[in-house]
Length: 218
Image (tube, rainbow, N blue to C red; front, side, top):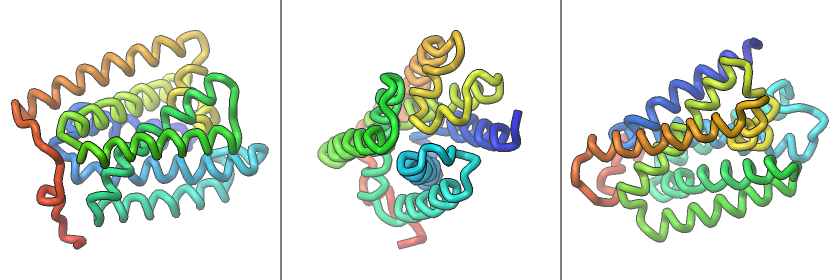
């Protein structure tokens, strides 16, 4: 396994565990981290969509762009409530959109644009509903479960880093011989994570509003 694989797999696994099973408890702390991860994916994917022959992780320019966008997403998620809501919803939409495009063999700038369109729809829904706590729990459970199975797949050598060019869903689907199984495991983990977090917060059904989002940065 390459150094890149070890780093990506470890980060995905650790962030995934935290998000899936304790995302709502550490929601405000983890949002900037999630924003950074998604920012890196979006930024890197953009360069890959423009210059597909240059690769993904191995491309210096893609990494630099990814880091810049990651830092921007993380900072904005930390400082502004509405940006955090947009990123929380938009991240799920983007990963879903680009993943489905990858499964059907549609890649490049078209897949990236479709990912952004779905991201906007999801982000709009999160804003419209003021991100009630049950929605935040589902978002963290699904995002965390996806990261967990991706990290495990990378460590086991079944998920290739280059397949992440087209999203986590596509990378899992492309896993040789066991793609659908990884997705099923991810769904099961997301459901378990949702109920674990629901039990953690009890019967409280409220929005993650500006009051809870106060932070030293503002």
